[in-house]
Length: 210
Image (cartoon, rainbow, N blue to C red; front, side, top):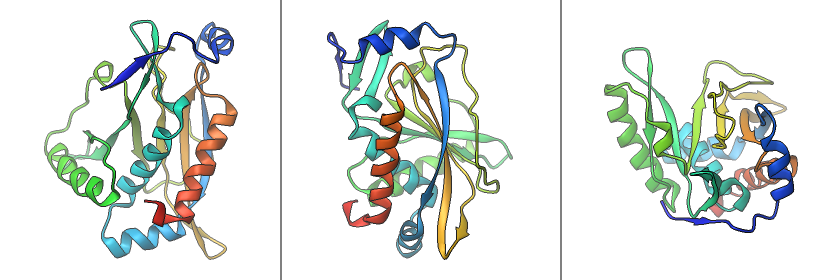
């Protein structure tokens, strides 16, 4: 978990402003066109869920603001981010699969399926404070939504992004999926969310970039 301690943070005024709030975390739901991605995962036999987690993580690694965290009351920036995904367990509950980010979707999909298979057999929750360089993912594959609010820990300094994917649906001949995103305003502003949405959709439209 390589990281750099940031001594001269460029948004320090905004950081100090939002850190005074009781809970500076906020939510945004964005709909994405995944028509080409659905075709790809069907052709390659990839998991749509793991592919979505991979692409969002890939984009966030390329956006420096999404790699900031608070560690021992210091601002740090991680070199890499890794998905931590909720998966359905065989007993009807759920478990979590923490998968290291890989440079290719095919490798990530293969490893994620292996780790998820083990997690399905042993339901359990990972310790959050040991995984600050992760992004939390979940899904509601049977429920679509236009707005979603994530649960929040009693720690306003928790800046780890949370993303939930809803049920995909067809509209005007294309396939769309909602993504409910939670971020913390001490590090992420609206323009950062806009960049995330633009770059994720760009990859969905240009899958050769994977």
